[in-house]
Amino acid sequence: MRRALKPSLPARRRDDRGSALLVVIAAMTILSLVVGVALSQAVQTLQTSEHARHWKQALAAAEAGIDDYLARLNRDDTYWQAADCTNQALQGPATSGGGSCRWTASTKPGWLTVPGSSGAEFHYDVSTSSTLIDGGIDLTSTGRSGDVTRSIQVVLRRGGFGEFLYYTVYETLDPADEREYGLNNSTALAKCAQYWWDPFKPRSGATSTCTDIQFAAADTINGPLHTNDAIWTGGATRFLGTVTTSWPTCKPINGEPRPTTSCYRKASGTSNPQFSKGIGYRSEIELPTDLGDLRQHVDATSPNRGCLYTGPTRIVFDPSNTGASQMKVWSPYSKNLTAACGGTAATQTNGTTVAVPQNKLILVQDIPTGWSGAPASGPCANGKIGGYPQSADYSQTLGDANCRYGTVFVEGRLKGRVTISADNNIIVTNDLKYVGGTTGTDALGLIASNNVKIYHPVSRTCQESDRHGRCTRWSDYENMSGPDNRVRTNIEVNASILTLQHSFTVASYEHGNRLGTLKVVGSIAQRYRGPVALGSNSGYAKNYIYDTRLRYAPPPYFLDPLRAAWGQKTYGEIKGKYSG
Image (tube, rainbow, N blue to C red; front, side):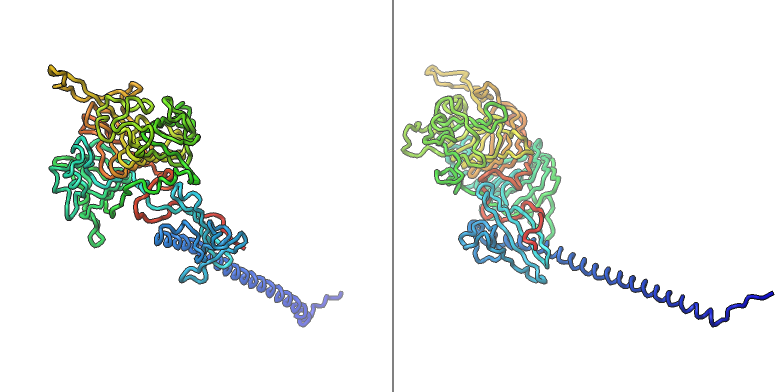
């Protein structure tokens, strides 16, 4: 029997050498793959990091472009009115007004380098097509870093009265108030047109002459408020928005805010007011004194011509109460009206209905000297202006009721966007609301050279006469019904209100019984505090609510404070322009 021979050791080793080679090759292959993957990941990480850097720098460059344009605007308030051919960032095919610089549709965009950056640049495109109407400038700023571009769209607008629900220059009764001071009281005119805190001629030294007005305990101010003067409260008034005053005692010292009690004054023995968001200091804000350049927008040469009426005029929005964008107009002393503004029919007894002049201005001017067919100086005949005025109303005995003045009587429901301005007063004769409510797109501006008043007719009767028929004893003044036989109670006004020389007030606020609540949704800016009640026995309690839309969408042609700075009102990123 034969035994199998075992292989010798050298033969085994020869077989192992082949296996070892395969292991080495496999290991080197795996190592190469690992190194390759690691290198690939490192390169991708570097690329991602570089892209992230450019991504961030491009956005920062776009924002630098916004800052650059704002700086130019605030150096020169008219900068937007013409293309600046020397500004490289403005050069481009989409630039408004570029024709004066000989830029064409094929002009390549220009870029400015962001100071201190590693090559980041910005370019901006500007649209001013609606600036005259709504005060806004549409700016698209594009930042570029490497091969990355990012674009931001913003709306720029000057700080306006729409920033506040309630703004007042002087917290005192208008010194021209004929009921309180008589006609043209020189003492009141000299002493009351001063701040209470004025360091040289303070109104606080003329308390026997001037009638300061309190915020009453029942008042609620639901929005931002500013006064250049010193607020005076008479109870636990509720201020639900931010409150600022230009009273110097409220100004911070070494950066430290002053105590709340340094920022307002209150009537002796009354409760403290409630400032839900505090009260602080802000520099004075200057109110325009006249309608200024507004008249150009009703001129026949205006590209967006509105309506110019002459003498007392009545306007009722949506007269059919169907939600239509219409208004009925009575303006008996106007001439040469366009068809869009009512033509000859608007001067007739029955008036006429026309479309609301969208995004335009309605201006009612005083009757010029020498105007043919003008009424005599004095009150209008009873019912002459579409049912107004009412001759028995006490207000018709006052000087500002002159039939030669540019006065507007307005009410109704507005669908659309329009501003009404008047050389004299604007009188709100009934509710004045928006068809779309206060969250839609409707917007109304009311700008009066003198007063904006809530209509409140009052009358009295003679209770005893002498033998010559002269009344020797009168009754107290009592509330009258309007032409529709209804007393005006619980009135609501949706509007931005601006009075350039006088006040927002209620006619004959001190007479008659309590009228409920006056609700204003919008904003109020006035030179003097206008009273709406006398204590709690007459007039209205206030319920003023801020319309937040006014921050970015004011009514057309609404005036701004003098020397107000431009600022950014809206912000949004869009797809990057000029890429590739």
